[in-house]
Image (cartoon, rainbow, N blue to C red; front, side, top):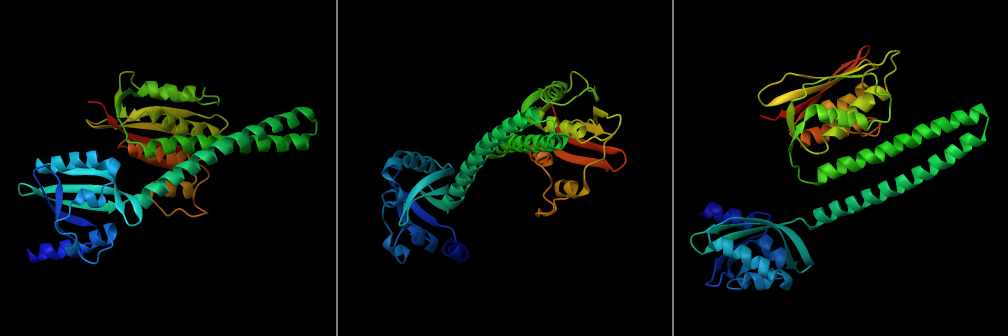
Length: 334
């Protein structure tokens, strides 16, 4: 018991031990130093003993929700939630955990996540603003560039406008990929039963390149389990396989291999120059990202992060002279 009491007192997370009265109101029995420091201006927990917990830390507009959590504790149930609580610094947000102890007692743990949530919200707002402004500026640049190209017969200027057009197209693609990644990573994933060949064909329809070099060899009845953005992953890999293929006779083969009871591998093989090692190492070997090794775009990151989010894996067979083979390990629908 002494070891438990020492842990209770010294752990750097606010914890309170309480007793529930007949109306499920929690009354403080004891609290550790972290709780006292976070929620009060007292010097020790003795000033808190026998006080009603909810009157001390629960905002008025959250009393009813807090009451429901206390009733669950009285029923012997565990609680896990994001809650708002009063502190001397103002209203803060916490990851709240509670467990019952004996018949009418319980422990509550509060982990302050206010700064983390605010930081995440700020990043999301910043991302939306940046993507919106980038799209608008790209539209302006592309429009003006097209006008210049039509109004001039100067071959040097036309070469410059071609380079501007490629750069603006690349930026537009980058913002689109960033939005897809953000949408997937910030939300909980729901897996659906999907027809794999249909997903590949859908991806092909969205590629604004000549796809006549693509050969598909997939059973029309093969089904997998993945999220709704899988076609973006497939589209990104195929797009790269075509866009950067410098062969005089480009070829992209899409097929399935290594089918097991639980997984299948979707393979996208090309005969291009292969993926640069500096970019491949970041994705497949989890090397540290630096200004020199971050890669040239988000395509591989999109493929990796979304595939892993869907409980799959990515691997790459890379041959400098013979192209690359991107393998997406996906859950098979049983």
